[in-house]
Image 1 (cartoon, rainbow, N blue to C red):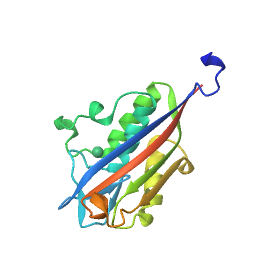
Image 2: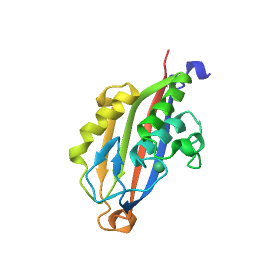
Image 3: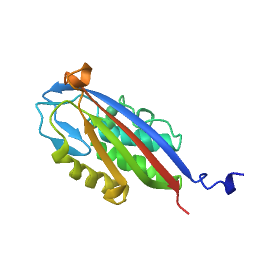
Length: 167
Ligand code: MG
């Protein structure tokens, strides 16, 4: 039955991540350093977008989540660039015989505006995942001054990813 199903080789995944914003931390989003008075708090470089992408990829193959693969209690991941975590995550996906079809993501952040940074983020992520830039979608929205996003207490990201079995 599964062999006759044209969708059997496709899997989708969803990821979400959230970090607190604090002073005296750099802000990395999508592998890009953002000019901001506040940065994200975390064990690694706290790149909320790359973490959501990792979780979407892992989720697509039901391989658990980023916290299981890269525990925040493990000193080897302290301060690590999330680009390395995404590289390791994608290696796992490819080891399982899958590659990325496309991903779509949204970052929630009150300020600064992310539009000047988005094309660089897409290039960095496309390079790590060995796909075309057109396969990487990054959007941004604000919290309209409401809640922890709107009050600049936090940053959040969502990602969906489609992977397919490489024949
Ligand atoms: Mg995170």
